[in-house]
Image (cartoon, rainbow over all chains, first blue to last red):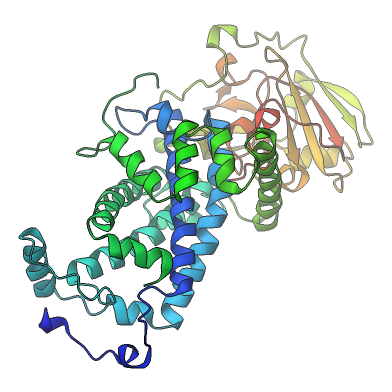
Length: 209
Length: 261
């Protein structure tokens, strides 16, 4: 993976390399809790008026009934939004997004996907994301923004009617909100599976290195 | 909504998903989380509340809901109108909605019915349907959004509530208009004064140009297009202008009280 090599001055400066800075770790785990609360309460809310021909098993939903789920959803949304805004602000201000997630090239994504599928993708340097990681992490940030905006447009289709209109109206916004949830769930499956396959990446997200 | 499919999202096993999700939690929390079956009580752990006292989680959620009432009142723009639609957009048939079957809906005789106005008003009196029908009416086609998530577009005609409040000399500095209804179990709901004074908030007498049918709240419904459906009481029998929060049928069970759209 020498093609990915770029100058990393921090490796020269710091004796013990910090892979995930403290702010990233704290915000990551707060986000993990918030996302789980939002998804599980969201499933219970979905069940009150399903968009598709299925409902979520009561055993994996949160809140017990619609009213309880709404209380959880509209409580956890503050955790998710405030935490997410801090993350976006710090990600932009510290240059982390630019350094870690950019550039993303289609050819890089394709070659890294091939390498990953044939088990030849290196994880030697966890400070650098490969192109597949870059794409997924950048993508999930976009999904996170869209799920919050579509959620706001469902919550406030009169006060924020311009936003609701942007999503194609109230009913369409509900589908957007749902598919963003599905995308996050799919991401979570891959994300958690890979974190367990490369345990040092999980360790880095807990103790930093 | 009773049918539960094994399917969560195509290709994703829900059990694995929850297993994966719980793996994101610190270990002791995870174990207790799984043991507790992801119940409300178990989740209090995540919020740092004592598990033996599940009321604290409820209490916390209640407090946040009250906070959300305040936030919503703050972002409520009294001049923001709910989008209106052409008549061709009206949902047909418009759904009947209630916590009882349509056969059990109040069957009110319009000749006997009276609308009692009390509380902080100059003219405390009971209005007959005939008297109310004489007030100027407007028609609006707006979207009704249910707390459950579904929505339907309907046509409602009636007297703007703010005109009526002026007519009866209501103290519009009061906090609420509290409505009581003829539903089984006595439905009631508080409406904050800012929303009561919103130009589209209406004492509704007609649906789709016809006298309000029994299913939609005959003889009078309060239509509030800036609120979720359960804040739009049907079969209304009285209004009290008050500074006291008197609760409501669904609000008391946990639905957010402001529930603005």
